Every structure is written in C-alpha cells, then in structure tokens.
Length: 333
Image (cartoon, rainbow, N blue to C red):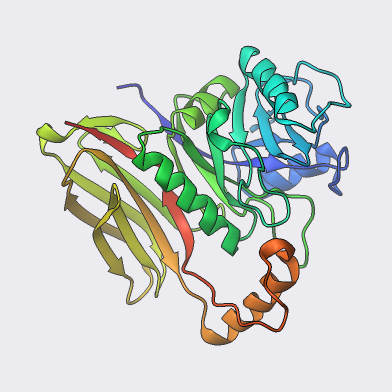
C-alpha cells in the first residue's frame, strides 16, 4: 500500500475577483494563518489562479465555480476551456461545459445541491461529478439534505466522494474560513495527489482546522479503500477531541452498528466494531444546540434560508447537525 499522509484544506474559496473581499494574496495568507496545507480558489466564472502553485508551504490549487441559475459546480485543477461569459441557462449548457472540463482532466464537484437559495436544479445523476459538497459553510439545515442525498447515493453503490467547503467570501463577525475543513489522505502535497485522493473519497471532514477528527481503519485499509467482508476484520474508529454531548454514529449501509455519546470531552476516543454486511461503513458525529441557542439559530435560518417556505412567525425545529463525518470504507463479499 502506498505511503500516504493527511493534508487539510479548504476546497471552496472566493476573492474580490468575483464577490469576495480579499485579494488572492490576502486569502492565501489567511489560509496559512489557519494552519491549512492546501486551498482551492474557486471564483465565480473566473480563473483567479492560472496555474496551481506553491506560496511557501501553501499549495494553491487552480479552480473555478461555474455559476448560473440552474446550479453551481466547482472545477478543480484545470482551466475551464471556455472564456467567459458562458451560456449557463439550460441543461445543455451545463452538459457542454462540464463535459469539456471532464475531457480536460478536471476534477468536478457538485456544490451545495440542496441549498435553499441556490440549489442544483438539474438532474444531479446526469452529470459526471467526482465529488459532492455535502457540507457548505457554517452548519445549517440544508446540509442535512445534502447528507441524506449523498448517503442514498452510497446505498445505490455510487462511489461519489463527499467534501466540505467554506464557500468563504468574508467573515461576518465569526470566522468562516475553513469552516468546514476537508482532510485528504494523499500520496503527497501536489495538485495531482490531492485531487486524486479527493476523487477516490480518501477524505474526512470536520468543523474547523483544529476541531474533532474521525479516522477509520480495517486492518491496513483506510477511508476510501475497499475490503473483503470474508476477511472478518474489525472496524477501528479513532476520534480526536470528542466533545461532551456529541454523538458518534457508525453506519454499515443504512444500519447504525455503533453509537456512543460523550459524557465528557475526551482528547482521544477509540472504538471497535464488527462489520455486518457488504456495502460500506462510514462514521459521523452529531450534536444539538441547547434550547436557547436553538431558538436563536432557528430564527436565523427562517430569515436567511428564504426558499424554505417557512413563515417568519412559524416554529422551526432544528435537526441533529453533524460536526464531523468520514467518507466510506467499501465492503465487498
């Protein structure tokens, strides 16, 4: 097995070249200060990065967010082979530009598909997406819809990788950069290796660069690998910074085969469980707000998730949010 290392990054970032507030240099410096290893600048319909480069230890990967009314798609690692302005009004427009990007060798990610304000309005299963942005910006209810769709794709056997991206434009009184952070288990810190690992689902996602992480092992296999059920190995789950009140859940397909709620914050946590059936195993950590903050957050969602069809004076219960999650280890007979 190839020797790999975990690198943390942000896959969805904007500068003032589209609708952000920072220059490219300021954004790079901010990502360095956050402790990231790589970043992907994805300005709307604009190539802010002509070619992937290093700024000291920071890997700055070329990207672009194809942005039109039908939906948003991130293109990583290759220049979009058309010059803007693009026609982005119909399914045919998207089929053309995404197809050209695929032919050019780009890695293609479906962005915030169930966003209340800017969802993907076309047939999501009709396009060659390598990844889906399950977690977009600070946690909110639309991400739960993204997670449910992705989980159902896994149940169908569709090996589409899940990522997180901060969709950073600016801070709004609280830090938005690298919230969430995507950890990638790659052969090296190069564009080729990072994007290959993203496509292969060798990723685990968490709330911020210094927050809780979940890692899965089954013998020598790690997240993104495939194992044999007949080998009868134990699934090992390792969690760092397991916060009081947070709940670890381990899925074997649509079944929860392990669940534990932290009674106090633990710097490290370990669990071991039997895999019951072929398909996949993955893990996530969920949490709930306290009742007072839930009311405040519910008000904010009513105000800003404008297309949910919820009146401002209607009660809005919040679901369990996820604080961290892994991509699967795949399990064959």
